[in-house]
Amino acid sequence: MRGFFGWRVVGAAFVVAVFGWGVGFYGPPVFLHAVEQRGWPVWLVSAAVTCHFLSGALVVAQMSRLHARFGIAAVTRAGALAAAVGVLGWALAAEPWQLFLATLASGAGWATTGAAAINAIVTPWFIRRRPAALAAAFNGASLGGVVFSPLWVALIGELGFGLAALLVGLAMVGALWWIAARYLGRSPAAMGLAPDGEPPGAPQPRNAGTAALVAPWRDRRFVTLALANALGLFAQIGFLAHLVSLLAPSLGAQGAGMAAGLATLCAMIGRTALGHALRPGVDRRRAAAANYGVQVAGLLVLLASSGHILPVLAGVALFGLGLGNATSLPPLIAQQDFRDADVARVVGLVVAVGQGAYAFAPATFGLLRLADPAALFLAAAACQGLAAAIVLRR
Image 1 (tube, rainbow, N blue to C red):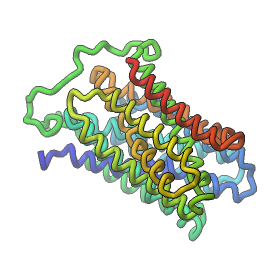
Image 2: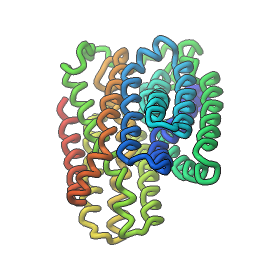
Image 3: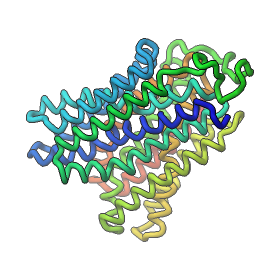
Image 4: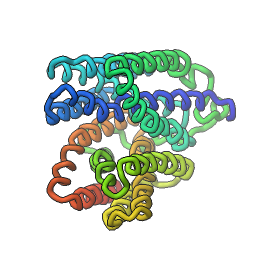
């Protein structure tokens, strides 16, 4: 078990997640600010960010087919190249149409190094230990935010957007190209191994008795998972987009940034703890509902904090504990509810629906904030509560 190659694959997936989220998820908010300096209207640049996520949603819906046809290694390499070209396009765009063209490439790069990709990389190697393995791999997403958010700002400030995009793009392509060749082009069967490091031929738990997925949007299992995930991410991304500016009046700009860092740290803690707690037999839908409940509690604590530091930090910590699990739990629920042959397809579609939904979240929550800041907290809590109710209805 200690020397099981699957854990090296998890380490590779961790690095893919660091770059995937660092460039494709945490990068666009920084890019938006950089592109605004050209004098382009905020609504236009904001629309480009939405286009980035929507184009990614279209690609991620086809991820299982792409992986089946070309292989995970080739798709990951192509994704790294697309991300690098796309971000460089953001930096060099002289006209709005060029910016929107760049978002097609950056969105495709995000899709092929995001949640569906991490699940596809890790899933063949683990069955019993999959919760812990996915938790470890997805922690790369949180680290990507910790590292790349300030790194992008520093590089763009010192070197300019163009050179910063070139350097990060080259680093991403170089790292993921090597990782794909060394770790992502292999399978347990080809190496004579069994999932979880068990002896070859050892019996493995399977969902063989679960009904096949024929028409996703007529299947209650899929619909409830996809809608709950979309609602949860819509609330989460919409709230996070405004977190720093909401906390700045009471904590100051630096303090608000540190509070956002606390949320990311708690995300890693929450994901790791739940990954080890989800033993065989634990209902993962109930775990997801409890996770949404923790975030609702955090939002309500923040709403009632009146700007006092300790309640604010407590609310941020509670909300943060659920952040990472919002990404890692849907693939685990898919493993529980669907046949092995359908899991990759389900995860790709669920991620696509969620990404299509949260692409509009920052703008929607911005309108709520203009109407009444309290409405933002209540709307996010209502979405999370509704997500908890839906995920429990199989």
